[in-house]
Length: 161
Ligand SMILES: CCC1=C(C)/C(=C/C2=NC(=C\c3[nH]c(/C=C4\NC(=O)[C@H](C)[C@H]4CC)c(C)c3CCC(=O)O)/C(CCC(=O)O)=C2C)NC1=O
Image (cartoon, rainbow, N blue to C red; front, side):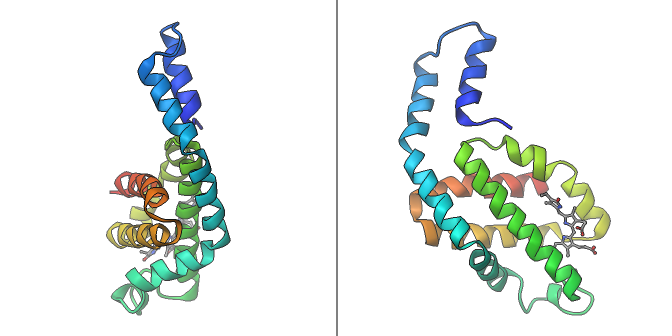
């Protein structure tokens, strides 16, 4: 896993150079948003179950997916879906704190699309649910932090598509 700081330092190190202006600007932007990130993570962790529940209500409930024959039908599969959304929320929060998406590649997206395809989990509906989670989260944490979280929700969606 990387974060905004190690990403910038590693890029300078491979060139054997001190941080240049643009690297320093990146670090500055990261440090300046530090408090925003921590505050957002605090609000998200205190409301995680509620965020997932609202996102499901907005995007999946009462659709064909929750009826017999749908991929969320039976409580076992419903629970697996809720759990997956909670993974996406938790790992997006980690990535937002780190200011870097690499944790998503390593721990979430690696092999996920193949798993979904082999189990018949619909990717389009999953992407819709993640987008709903993005909206619900932005309402909770405010526009600036919401935009930052959005980067990582979108990263998961493009990794799945
Ligand atoms: C931390 C990283 C991590 C991820 C991301 C992860 C995902 C993941 N989701 C799975 C299943 C699943 N995922 C879903 C999800 C959904 N079905 C829908 O229709 C909805 C659109 C959607 C929810 C948004 C369902 C229903 C299953 C069970 C499928 C089955 O067994 O038939 C499985 C197969 C094994 C299992 O059932 O636990 C994995 C590995 N596991 C991990 O360890």
